[in-house]
Figure (cartoon, rainbow, N blue to C red):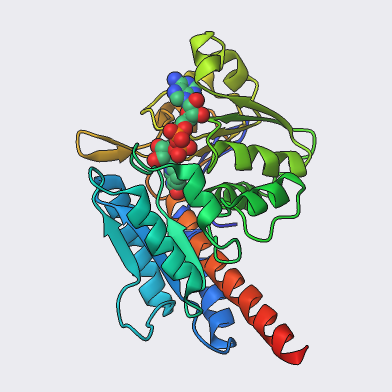
Length: 307
Ligand code: NAD
């Protein structure tokens, strides 16, 4: 198991799930797979000039370069930045359509959130579903609903990978997801349902009704994806719970999650840190999905040739 046992209590081991180590192992697996592929998967990333987006993009570029996922014909790093304030729907759509048409582009990733003047649902629906490495196209979302996803939400898959590392079976467990966004909360809740966890989804309405604490307190598995520093108090964590913190917040120049880490760790059996938990595994899942998209497109084109 790729986790750091820090302290052992009579009740449970308080294990910090090491996302960097899991990501390293995924990278080795991918490198092995890439060595046996004919051709190079090519990923394209559209992002906006916000600090969070730039940090995430840089992490993606670093890993993609390391894996050789886009040393392509153009020798660019495969990214395109739009200014947050002045990006237009037309320009963003033009670029996505260009990448859709380019047969040397196998994966397209559009950073979220998008600026208010951009309609995110139109963007999701525009990406070629075979190249949609974040699983946001309506076809891919529908497949996830029916538990038949080809390519799923990278963050949701990363959350599930961290939970898998605990070795705890999910069937019959009380799972609570805080946050119901299209790219994290909803897909995570569906993946938990697929594992037969009894799943509750909380959100802003739950908090406004004053009922967040009561739901969190009974969670065997807690996934938090809100974007509010220390929203979840350590004292709310059920002893022995699995806690996965997806939140990324910058407080006084430091990155922190949505969960009060130290007090939560003292009660949880397993907890993911921020940074170094979900983030690195998510980045590697983008690469994994790009390889899957590439293989799908290769199989499709060789099928066409054969047929
Ligand atoms: P979002 O803004 O789309 O959704 C936020 C969700 O939180 C909503 O469902 C909202 O109802 C809920 N919420 C807001 N205030 C709440 C409150 N007081 N109590 C309970 N619920 C509340 O956000 P998102 O895109 O899902 O991202 C959530 C967080 O996860 C952000 O911090 C983001 O940076 C981070 N994130 C991390 C990764 C990663 O790889 N580590 C990937 C994606 C997002």
